[in-house]
Length: 94
Image 1 (cartoon, rainbow, N blue to C red):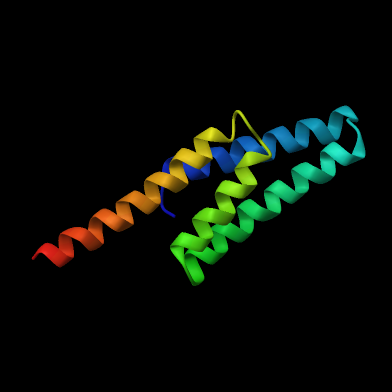
Image 2 (cartoon, rainbow, N blue to C red; image 1 turned 180 degrees about the vertical axis):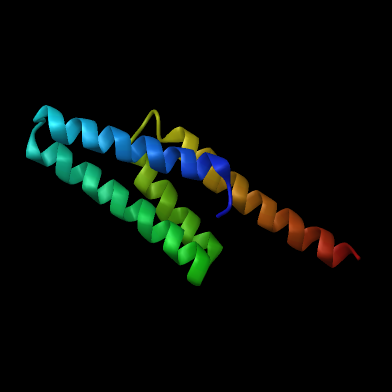
């Protein structure tokens, strides 16, 4: 997942989480944000270690928590999948 949109969204998600944590928002909201960040981290890890498709799915699931700003990460993960499919397609055509 070498896409700038993904890394930008990770930074935004972390900043949003830290802001909510420092402002004293309800614990349930902070817990949901932690869950989203865990899905993001798991998605990035799985995409590098095992399966890009599964990793992107996990990352997109984590971005749903941060909607609407999470759309940046969703688009980045989708673009990564499209790039991988395009690469395979062109390799098969040669």
